[in-house]
Amino acid sequence: MEPSPAAGGLETTRLVSPRDRGGAGGSLRLKSLFTEPSEPLPEESKPVEMPFHHCHRDPLPPPGLTPERLHARRQLYAACAVCFVFMAGEVVGGYLAHSLAIMTDAAHLLADVGSMMGSLFSLWLSTRPATRTMTFGWHRSETLGALASVVSLWMVTGILLYLAFVRLLHSDYHIEGGAMLLTASIAVCANLLMAFVLHQAGPPHSHGSKGAEYAPLEEGPEEPLPLGNTSVRAAFVHVLGDLLQSFGVLAASILIYFKPQYKAADPISTFLFSICALGSTAPTLRDVLRILMEGTPRNVGFEPVRDTLLSVPGVRATHELHLWALTLTYHVASAHLAIDSTADPEAVLAEASSRLYSRFGFSSCTLQVEQYQPEMAQCLRCQEPPQA
Image 1 (cartoon, rainbow, N blue to C red):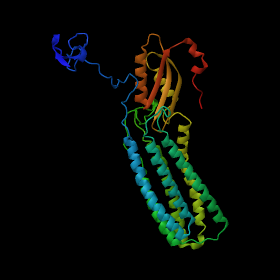
Image 2 (cartoon, rainbow, N blue to C red; image 1 turned 30 degrees about the vertical axis):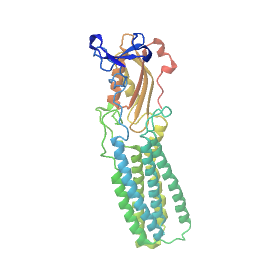
Image 3 (tube, rainbow, N blue to C red; image 1 turned 60 degrees about the horizontal axis):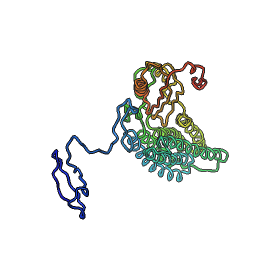
Image 4 (cartoon, one colour; image 1 turned 180 degrees about the horizontal axis):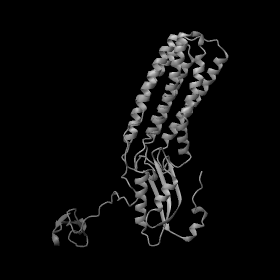
């Protein structure tokens, strides 16, 4: 190998075969990395962030939990620790007092601990990225965790209702009024503390399309609706049911402490307040079933979304409009837009996507733009769905 000058000031290197050092045919001239700017080396293409009108309103979210879910995880950790400590205390107190009502409250706390641990697991699972099999990711694991929480409470409450009914039929039991009163008072304090920890009136929220809820178009300005995390909301409903029952147990314990002959207040309070606890799960169960059945998100109406798309200049008609939710705060929309032949498809797509994101807070929008055809008015698949 020997250096060789070259015209134009380029630094080159001549590779010469040992058997043909003097011949020109055995050499190969190679440009080094120090070439002139007029002949740059090809660089490996790198993915770049495209502007909004390409297809994505927001940049790729960072890995891990969002601030809202980090706040939810801290709430669940704190509530789970408090719940476990006071559950152990209630088990001991209920055993010493021979109180089915206290054991009922302890069993509800046990169900709460299990549901909160399941919610924490679902929060972790929801951070996993989307795959070719799970193309939406694991967001809906949060909803499944809330459903498991509700089902567990129903199962435990059903068992305790049966035991309360047996006690009403057979009066062969004794209640320690003092131990029951002390344990019930502690249970009320514990549930108040957990309700304070899980209350979602003031958690932080975002104003983008990554999880915030917006008011429908006909309801005025775009104010976020603090629906909060589904798992935390289900745990909060659990605690409210337990708090209601704890007040009932406390009232029954006061009555039994001063009037031991009224020991039937123990199974009666268990029976009445277990029913109230079941009723408190109805809102969460309704929301979970709406999500799992791919229903239209809460506070987002079909007609306002349709009218918003039709108000875009150039859009003549819409069809195949679908609205659904992965969680209470992750909303998705898809639709076909039939436009005039003179309309710019890119401009229509950009304007329609912008209006959906800004007015309704959708996390994902998929719009297909196509030329309007008169036959669409008679096409059965292009008709709007009927009212439910």
